[in-house]
Image (cartoon, rainbow, N blue to C red; front, side):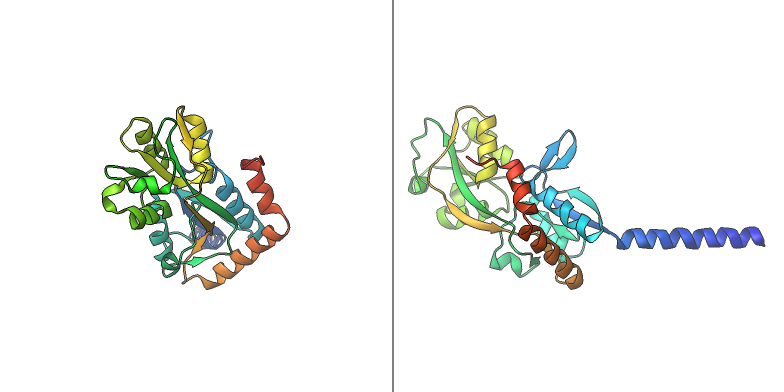
Length: 244
């Protein structure tokens, strides 16, 4: 009998610890192919977004698990409760805000245009010409804006920004529209490419949390705002994006 009671108590304790662990853990979804915001460094997730989310979770006392998934599935996964947090240099838009809570913006971004160094494309208007193909990462604002501005026939979609850039290098597309910080990284890594001097669009980034998790959203957003105010967020950004 004592043995049975001991086993039962052990099971109750284990379940209790598991419950505590679950309550103190959050799962975040991202697409780890968007340097310097999220990428792998020696097999470990790194980048601006990664470090900020880690800092917020540490401040709140949560263990963090990061899931690498397709960019287009992040917001849907957060909205349905599959993930607690979504991130990926995701632009705050009215349309996306219908599905998920956005936090206070922690960074601003610019959509830039990458072309070959010898390209005849010198500005946005040149992208409207017949036969021009624009590479974009699927479901990003670059995809959304470019489709609206230039039409479906001009768009070539890729799962990763790096794939779009590779298509540009090999002549399969004529230009790539993507966030400026990743654009700078990709141009540095691929000879023969350049970024046009005129920005295509400007936008604000935020983290995503389900409307069903109001208490968690309020806690996360408050902690994020405190880290913005005390300079932690800017220090993280400066770590990855050096001042000119």
